[in-house]
Image (cartoon, rainbow, N blue to C red; front, side, top):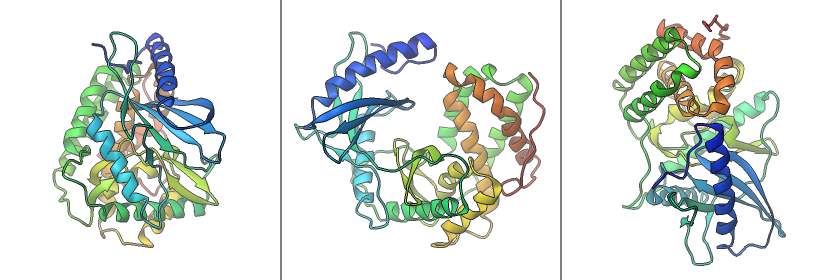
Length: 340
């Protein structure tokens, strides 16, 4: 039986999206929705579609990749339901089918595994365009802290299953990158990544999780997973949520910000709760970890190769600073020359 998600070549990507369109049209019939249109959004860990209806409510249909079990997807929806009980948060929430089922498995082409499908309430707002303002960055920090606080109040049921993001997950990602790094890295660049990964793992093993620095996190809080309404950020796409350090969540957002706005985000976060006095060293470790994991994730997709190559002059500048113990989070780092 073939996995449903296969897109490491252009031909496989086209075939996958064709299968996914048919699955989406079959799945939507399972819900009590008077829908007007279905719009493809993106192919990533999930294939997503926006469902517009004849009411004021829109929805997000997700076709999940084979890496997530039914129990993991169901647990994500349980967490989201709990987070929405907080007055300070507004996050997506799953809806049940006509049969009362939250995680469907839908028939697909013969020879392929049946994918899981979920339907979510759409979070209205706009993706950030152009540069972020000081206010954007500050409020992102406030939102991340509120998210961590609300997740801490959640009491998971006994059958709750979500991944842990740490040493073992990072090693698995590096093993995947080893298969694809030649698409965008020279041998010298790959050696740099390996040295950085070794230092990240070493540093992670010295950290000590506690209720103050560790818990349930979003785990993919890049700015593409936020929408803004009235200058306030709202987190979306919790498909990667799991257990990890709070600094890991923060690092995922800092990766896309200029140094000034990284500092503004930290100020927003600390307006509610202070970080530990020596947090910067660990935050830089998570910054490099998150950056490398991004490349591990995208390396197998041929559509991403050109952008991965373009980003290396900055990525490897950060890695070199990290390996030389030079502070870099709140400083402008100059790009470096990359061997082609």
